[in-house]
Image (cartoon, rainbow, N blue to C red; front, side, top):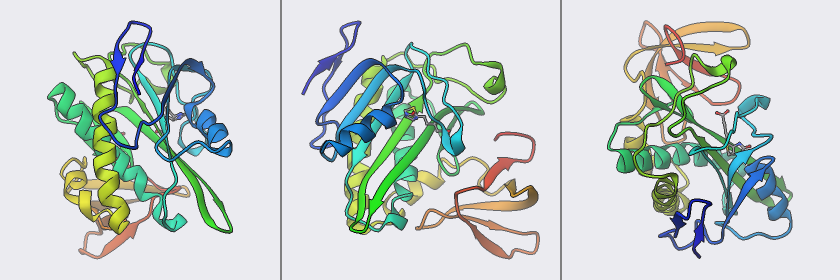
Length: 263
Ligand code: BTN
């Protein structure tokens, strides 16, 4: 399927399932919400919904995701995976690797990952991922992986101005989307076979910010300082205390930051 945006750019996913169909609208409340509505109506595994602008973009932990029009990407993928609900959060890490690979291929610049799923470019957050799942007695009904990437953007609202950033890309967003869908499909095929992070572990950890360095772990008002060792096959962050005692940090309400701020 081929579609064009308002400037006539083509999108022609070089994939078999992810991005078929590829649906696009100028404006939507949230691409995740729209895809949820389509999922309930029977949309197929691989359906992608993309918008130029979101009026109610959603972030993690009930936050909003500022979504003005421009070159920014707001895109969600509907998956109907055959796996346990407990394995689905690894899809978020897989999406982060796929986005980093796509941005590196299209811009030629290194892109890093801040556990679990932020992409960091020149020490600023340029991309966020929100994964939402619907389950029933039969298991997973669907998973929606939504990704927002700031591209060639130079204005941010005050609340996020100190940590948000934007990728500088010469290629248009359609080229980035095509590359991202290809990387996502390749990684998904590997992931669905074994349902662990092993196939992309190296790709993830080599981009992880603060690996081998001290990080602050913030949870329920408490803060502890640990050394970060990277993720394991289950997607947990392995950290160690000053005596070398290791522990696993599971994503959720935990926030991991650098010693002096966001990174
Ligand atoms: C985060 O808080 O870091 C996650 C942000 C996720 C934003 C994307 S934009 C496309 C998709 N639709 C949404 O409403 N949110 C996600």
